[in-house]
Length: 494
Image 1 (cartoon, rainbow, N blue to C red):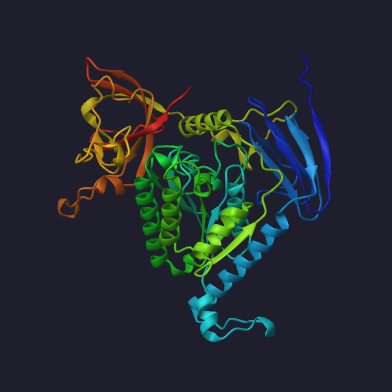
Image 2 (image 1 turned 135 degrees about the vertical axis):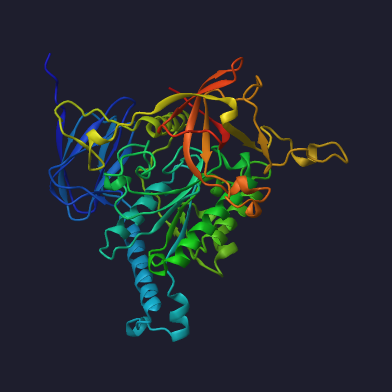
């Protein structure tokens, strides 16, 4: 039986966008026929089919008008002329001006100003800082898309900027598995083709021959989806990321001019629940201090904007920016499936099957043949790998402890996990394998484990307690003997 090719052309006027949503197990291909178009700031090449799958929800925007061909059947598709792209474009222009001023200051060059924007030298010097931007907003506000737009515009500016994109939303995971906090210097456009790769792929888990996979993110393992699980640990990891980013900037002042964009979890915008407001205020402050934030963008949330203005308006710039009408309300089931897509993609790579009628599609502009990985399944001894859990699995608040009692295990204490114990919780668990301890024993300290970066992730697929062996799935075949790993609350799902 012949395949039916569902294909349709859409003519988009200037400053409009084609929005689409995909169902489970479906894919589409979008080809730019003529004109110019972009997806979250990344330009499309004319005549090349771009594949989208894994329940992707995105939009093709054009500044000047274009015609696109859509092959396949999205569950939802429409064109909108009400977009916030002009506001986002103006932000990019303002950030570019900040970068140019910062670069001029770095090289001791004069900063040219128009007559009505001229400032005194002291004011000009103090304002000649690169953009260090914190983006806050509630659930389903499009924060990550805005981050991608701003970063993609920066790398397209022709100035060889490489802004650092920081992801402190463990529910998303960035370039790693869900549960991670990460940062990377971005040198090329971040593609959008699947929620399994929200920020593109990293060189640690995909072929480095692909330009979009040349990223080398710095990754820390939080291990949980929500801020409330262990806010003290999240605070420490944010500080670690900030320290590393600042060290990089100190070593490369020229590179620091491109600035930082920080994506945050929706819990930073929500004060619901006992004690949550205190946690989120501390974590917002931790981000501001760690990354030396000078601009806060609040996405479509009046109350949060007022709160940030009151708290930080006197010391840095707070701006409320519009939320796109194309942002989709995502339910718990969708987010759970996306976690599964991300973890599966980390191990196996991702191949989106093209819709009927498309033979040579690309994913984010890259060829399909290079995007499949072959993980290895190995049997190791329990003693080969040292596994910890940070803090107790469940902890009552300090106020609930008996009078005079002290907590035996703190939220920051590494607790050794014995795989031989029936309640170890290791079967099907995602483990973050850590970088080695400091080679000099004199330089080691009690909480060093909390400050070690992640070198990769593995999954425990079987526990053989009588023989003290476990089977682990890994994207590489390297030895795990003598390595240290941390287990969180994420589980592997086939």
